[in-house]
Each structure stands twice: as C-alpha cells, then as structure tokens.
Length: 216
Image (tube, rainbow, N blue to C red):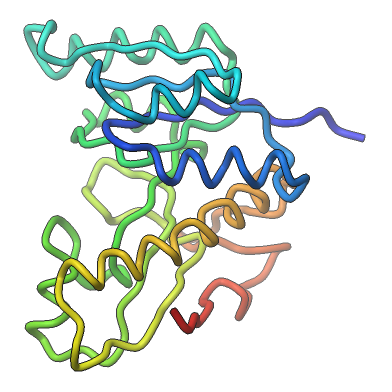
C-alpha cells in the first residue's frame, strides 16, 4: 500500500472548500493528509477551521512583501519545507507568478466557478446569467501560468433557473464545489490522473465521470 499523499492548502477567506476536504477525510472518503494551511490574510476564517481540525497553519501576509515575486518565493520556501505532493488552491485570491506555477506544475490545482473554458476571470455567475446560459458550473483544473487555462480534471454543472441571481447561483455552485473538489483530490491521491497533450486522463483515458450533472 502506498503512503497517503501530503497536501498544503492555500486560502484567503472562509475556507468552505477546506472544510469539505476535512469532512471527507474524517469520513474516510478522501485519503489525504493536509499538513499545512497557509493564508495570505491573517483574519481568514479558514485558519480557524484548520486549527480546530488540528492542522498546522501559517500566514504570509502579502502586504508585507515588496513584490509579487518575493511573496511567491517565501511561499514556495514554506511549502517545500513540508515536502507536499500537492498544493491546493481553495479560495486563494492571488495571481501566482509563472515561476511559482512552474515549480509545482502537475501538482498545483485550483477550482474555478464556471464551465471552463467559458468565463475565465471574475464575475462568472453574472456573466452566465447575462448570456442566458442553460448550464453553469465549476471546474477543477491543474494550474498553468495562463489564468484559468490549465488542463481540466473534473467539472460539475447545474441548470440555471429564471429566478437565479449572481448571489443565489454562487451558493448553488458552492454546493457543487464541496462535492467536486474532494472527488478530484481523491483521484489525484490514488494516482488515477495523468496529463497527455494538455488533457487530463482518468485511469489512462477520457472519462464521462469528468463532467457530472447536479440538481441543486
């Protein structure tokens, strides 16, 4: 039996996805050891979630660094001290330098609230509503230097309703995220994911499981 993979989770806010990871680990649904949670904001509630779960925390306040690169260098040094197998972005509100991304290429993952390649960037929920889309969702992907452009691991979708607002849609998508992200991490932890020609393969092939439909 292979040893459990070690993860560092990067957050900036409430840490709701982090809590989903913790819950899935505690329930035996996710074989992963979160060894460290790092925030760039000292008041991030996710740090309290981690402490309550007995996970080590640290804060690297980006305002205390004179450049984006110097912050990323300090962040890399702190992560590498843990010998992490995977670095998980869970509401980490920083654009990372190409040097940082390339350092963890193939083991740096993020979640984005849209069905990529649709709507990279911000305000994804309102953009989906404005476009009159039938479907909206979330994507978990490996990170590359180009923003929201990395190979997609897993996506979840739901149907928009006439009553959806950006706020209500955000809450519905959060419900999806809390199921999708642990699933994607479980696949990574079990060595079921490979990248070929900028596509993520599950068990060596493209799988229908990588797009899931939800009723939320």
